[in-house]
Image (tube, rainbow, N blue to C red; front, top):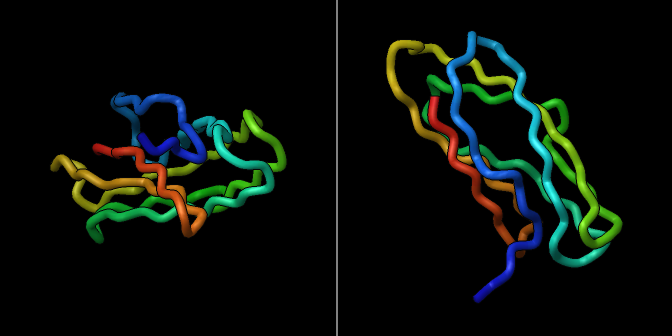
Length: 98
């Protein structure tokens, strides 16, 4: 079984107002000195804006926080997306449902 290079705290769901900021923590469970970039796959009606769209780790088990805001053009519908942290070798996926 392949081990992920970073791990995020499990996904969560809650009702929030438009433009609410969310903060999460990622833990490096792979190699030292690695950098991951955020990639979001979502419909055009969903915009996700990151404070910083990359995470750089120096050590194993190092924790980094990241935050993002969600903007929805169609607030009465359910929209699914995925956040992928990628280092071009490994991809860590987190589902997003708005």
